[in-house]
Structures are given as structure tokens and as C-alpha cells.
Image (cartoon, rainbow, N blue to C red; front, top):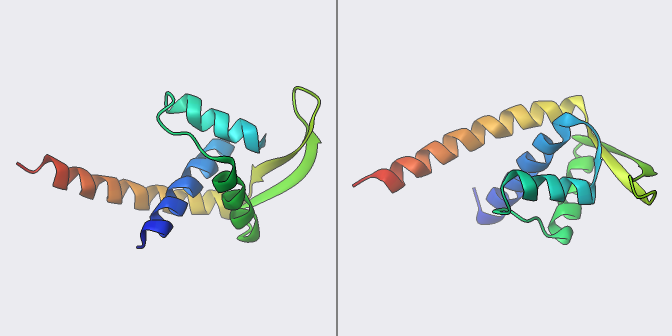
Length: 108
């Protein structure tokens, strides 16, 4: 797996997990990730929207226009059945990867 694939895969799983609680617009997705990780992870707009478009092309997400709480037009993304399946698969892959890295780091 290349560094780029790892970074994209990590962002994908974070976004997919964020959307399990319902549709959100891009800013709300980035805010949820930032707040949930206690400011440890901050998603740059360019990376987020690239990921959203990539996942939309893969049919993991669907998007429609709506209004934010501030009454601004925004695209709201929601998880599809294929997206839920991708989240399951990616989460399992991430768990295996993180466990392997942790084993290496904890080796005396």
C-alpha cells in the first residue's frame, strides 16, 4: 500500500464513519472529525472535498443540495449501502494495520 493510498484510505474511513449518524455537509464533517479527535486531526478542505468526490464516484456516498443551520446552501452527503459495506471493510483493514504498527512500536 502506498503512502497516498494509506492517507486516502484513512480519510475515507473517517468520513464514512462520520456519516453513519446521518447526512452532513463538508464543513460539518470536518468539524465532527476535529471535535471527536479532540483537535488531533484537522481535515484540510481540499483533501476533504477530493475524498468526498472520490467516494461519490465509487457510489459510497450520495449528495444533494440543502440548507445548513445558518441557512446557507450546501451539498449534504449521505452514506449508501455500498458506503456502509466499504466502511466495514476499511474499518477491519485499519484495525489490522493499527494493531501491526502498535506491535512494532511496543517491541523492546
